[in-house]
Image (cartoon, rainbow, N blue to C red; front, side, top):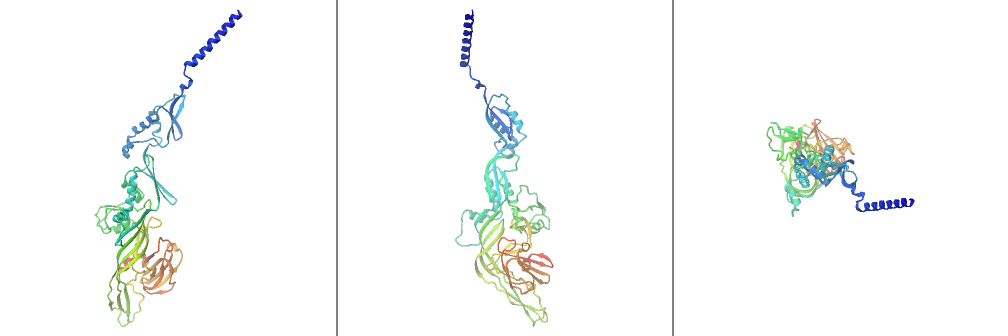
Length: 484
């Protein structure tokens, strides 16, 4: 009996082993339960599993019709923080793409294809977004043309160099003083994306896409008074209003004009040779005759203007002359001084403020006028208290009228540099700034036209020039009015 039990047990064991072997041969292994799905993350956080990443991308593109319409694009993409990874998992805990879309749509903005533009100037970095790369080229060109004559610019682009100097500007170089880079990227739709070249041009020139500084013209207004009242230079006003041609253009009552300050994202630097025919105005010399009564006078010699063909090598930034050196002067006709004789019987004259000497040799250039302008160093609108004179063949500086030197100091002097102040009597005072050398001292009496100093670039300046300021009864005035 024990033998039968033992045999039965053995037989049973054989059968079980056979079944196990058979089952192992005919059934798939457990790996058939692993699934290939896609794990969705947003900003590093798990959102859920989906079957197809393409279905999610397509749904995002289909649903975002408003973004397509706003930016006139054909396709909308996932948020920049969205990441999808393919995973192999046993889990069947899937979410539909609609559920995933609902989870992410209000957390981070969807994106569109565009470009990130960076402008780096020293330690400052400005970043903005555009849709079309070509708009950047157009905007840069439009900004350049705000400061440069289009004909001269086209000649520069076409390398159309004149064989000999003719009247006009020959541009030798144009460049931005900032590092500008552009890269293609996916731009979040909630960013301020510039979509056209005109708006981008405005942004480049004014630093904003919304010009809110406007003014309605009144009956008594002129371009000069509007510019002055809004702390703008006339040239800056004309740049801000390109449809107004020239500072003498007529304005209509009620016409709305732009009075926004110029603030380019990147400074436009232009180097050029400028050739011009310059009238050399004659000077009036005064002589005194003690044989004539004080109320008597006559013209001893009639004056006549001269003419020169002058070429200047000039560097400008945003339309402001930084430096201008005279490289050629062809004298066509010499100027002849006018000589006036005044009676001086029983009279002692202390200067004569009827006629004023010019403070530099001629020809010359006015690099900056009296009034509001964009500061060439700080880049902001400010009031310029005098006239800047440069481009002379000699650096000699002359007293514009007889008088007494009330100060002559060297050093920084709040940006004025080495300077001279002369009291001419009758309420007139003149100040000569940025000199390199003083040739008079405090207390000296000087004659009109006397050499008093040497032009330089001391204090706050961008190039060698004379800054002349004039006061009348303690109030600053435009020095050029003395010569009108």
